[in-house]
Length: 119
Image (tube, rainbow, N blue to C red):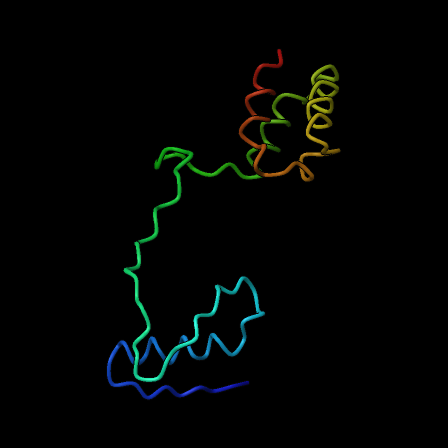
């Protein structure tokens, strides 16, 4: 474990100290190009843009679909109906999933829509 103490009197001094630490490990991760600092000359600073919110794909009042929701829907469609079991197996295989538990969660909504259309 490492401990780093930074003594800075202003936010600019703090930024400079952090930049100096970052320059010590330029090959780690996706490092930005290193611009050498000149003594006595402050580094250029650019305003930081606030992060944009992630795109919303579902309405705020809808809940996330869980594997239990999918299992329940499958059970309702297949209980006592061999033809529906076969149809659901075929839909699952179209997603590369041998069973509901192996179905990727990103496909739950589309999968539920497809099985609702089964007679």
